[in-house]
Figure 1 (cartoon, rainbow, N blue to C red):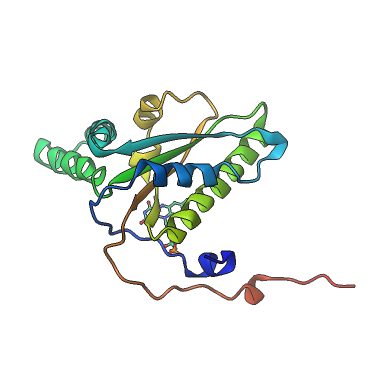
Figure 2 (figure 1 turned 60 degrees about the horizontal axis):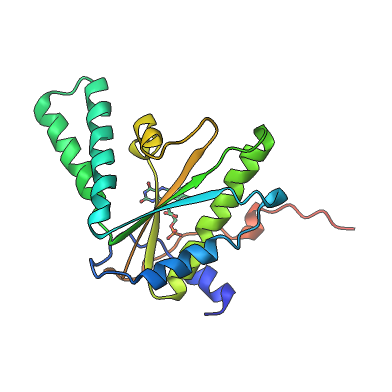
Length: 191
Ligand SMILES: Cc1cc2nc3c(=O)[nH]c(=O)nc-3n(C[C@H](O)[C@H](O)[C@H](O)COP(=O)(O)O)c2cc1C
């Protein structure tokens, strides 16, 4: 697929089938990620791939996180178990989930730039998935960033959770995409 076409036709695909994705395909996605630009070649990305029964570990961590959050917010037990179940289920919405982690840099600027590099890596994965006929959505949210999830991934200070990429064969059609033309957001400085 031509790159500009891939960029312009990619959409977040939140509904996918449970058809398994081959390991070879997943590796292609990851290999595309590491081609992203990264300042001082820090290669700050770390990936956790959850597939098949392996999603159970992710589901458990999400469910535990949901419980901690609900308890902290003072929910009653029946509300808590509803939240816990909903979070557990989310881990199984797609056959593959790739968590993308950005490692801390040696100083604040490098940490910031490492995150930027990881965001570029995420987009490489999204575009490669699209070109392979796969659907992908970048997911985050309060559960995603919670300290309990940080402990699950054994993160150190300054490491950051960048994305949970939920990937599978699309089970939805194209949507209308809304984008403000770049011309409206651009100031030209010309000679
Ligand atoms: C940092 C980041 C976090 C996101 N988190 C979520 C999320 O938690 N849930 C979700 O449905 N989409 C999430 N998205 C995807 C956006 O909703 C999506 O990119 C946006 O709606 C534009 O749609 P498009 O990707 O089809 O162009 C996230 C995107 C980014 C860049």
